[in-house]
Length: 257
Image (spheres, rainbow, N blue to C red):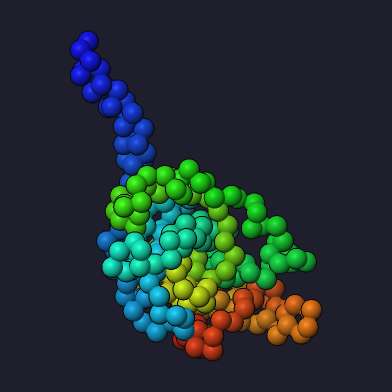
């Protein structure tokens, strides 16, 4: 075999696993937002008042198996958002998917108090590490685009502050989750909520929140810290308040369908 032919065969062989992975990811992402749909909904949500710093965002969608289906950003380019928030958005998506069930949705905001020392889920945040090979592989020029290198990989990771929500189809089927990052954790939650609503994937059956019309909403019931004494969540699912505006907005978010 000629050297040029051998090189061609080897190139095809090396590309085959990546092609197979992308094909598998596409098949496993049926019913979930495309890159274009995620970006449009994320931009629309980010452009509303969300009680944060008015920053650009990263958003990631994973399927029920934790495979990344789409990654997008809202700014002019990938440098317009905090670079570290790309992987954090994927962590949040993985977390909301990993710890939600067909009849019980847990947002990442719901987990904050439970994972603190003495909490009922202390240690959870260390239980499923990020897959760094998936998180940082590929050309950074493609981050946040339709061919983001995370797409098709299982990202892993656990994140325990606002911005991650499970996705439920119109039939009430848990199909995956969305994670949003780039602003305060409270604004992230509000933006994720509005993005999910715009994508028509908020047919949420139930959660741990006190408002049945928003069952996996962020819960602001932590008493203020005094001296060395940490604040305590009355429900056990509380999240710290970031701003009065973000807290008010959370109570006015669209009700689930």
